[in-house]
Length: 171
Image (tube, rainbow, N blue to C red; front, side, top):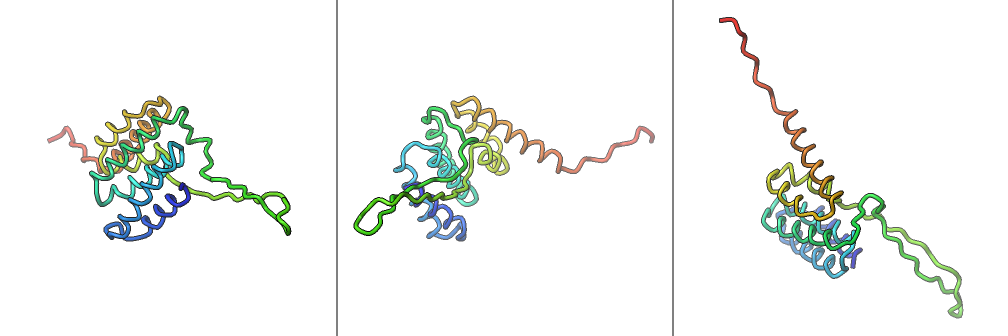
């Protein structure tokens, strides 16, 4: 389920975001992710899908972001830092006659957003909405990191604005 959800999101990201096929792929990815259970991969998939939707359909993006936050809140100890964003599968290798000959180890690298980077990207689009959504995170560390990411967006925005010229005291 997780691999399919990841694949659907990546294809939808590559397509034109206003394309109906891209929206169908995103909805399929969201459905697949929710079927996979409450895991870090599910939360990452939902955060990425919400980010993709943010450019075209803000209301749907907000719904998916809420689902992602609820998923993160249901995880006992959400640790996005130690997660190396890779899934590992070890299928059994059978030889001739069906004899066991060891296992293969496959690692599937699946880069997706964590709450910090997701809220940073949402903060650029709608700072107030992102700030109110970040306060819904129950885990103090995740809430703190998301709030700091939003503060970084605010500081970056302040630094890029041109300053008004200073007025001289002389007439």
